[in-house]
Length: 185
Image (cartoon, rainbow, N blue to C red; front, top):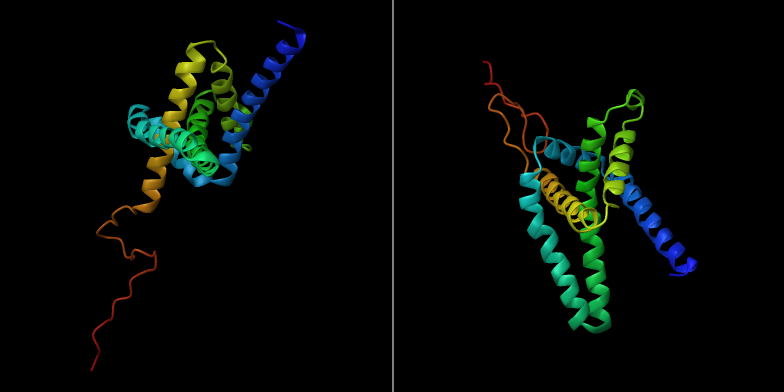
């Protein structure tokens, strides 16, 4: 292998590693509430996000590949768009997973900079993914699927409001209910 080939592989891997961490931080910056809900979900366990995320990640990836092969240039563009949307959706959950990992590796500097937990967890996830075979084909895909599941659960929790408590004095829109008092004579 030539030196140029070695350097090309090195810089591609370095770029992908930096992109992994950067996407997690971008998701935390753009969608903080979704990342917070994803973090809470991954704290409680990874099995449910994996089970939910498997079809959520598999169907768009399979349809993207099918569109790219069968749809010609337009199918390739649509497939790339679907794949990109799936990656962004999954990285909301991956940011939650990275935040969960980073919070478990707590630092005193996190009090004033809560994003550092996401950075620390993202670096740990990305560097763990560099491990040959296990990291490439097991750890990173599983993190992607867990991220897709956690982000989907966060989206569902946002779309389907929780049942209000019986003693709550509010409507679905969050405005207080006004009850008319009987007229006094």
